[in-house]
Image 1 (cartoon, one colour):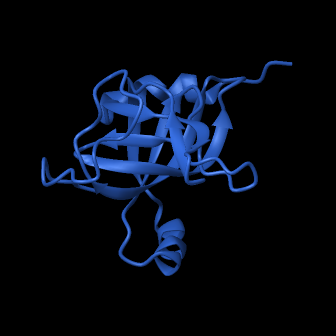
Image 2 (cartoon, helix red, strand yellow):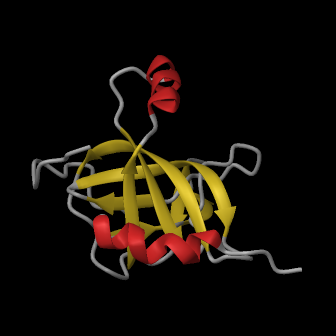
Length: 152
């Protein structure tokens, strides 16, 4: 039985007040092991899409700051599904490039990708960085520098 997609009903009003922004997503595709037995992540090609960025609610932020002091967090709404960290399957979270920063999807908070076509994820800022080129198969070099200001 198909339920009522409330997100689709309010989406136009939300984006009229706070428009979606372009982001680049680099999704994990597993690991490889080199000749020295070191694991290295493998990535799917980077894609540009639209997402809704919102601040993390106060109560959640209080808990998160206790866990990881001095970290910046944002919630993002995506059409479709974006992977978060999953320690049980040893998969890393997707990387989201938005507003001059590289954000890692730490947790999928709401996953309605199959029924309603959207998900909500929580991200933590890793570093200031320009996004990879569309189609790139790895994050930008670790020395990203100060390309742009990150606002949270």
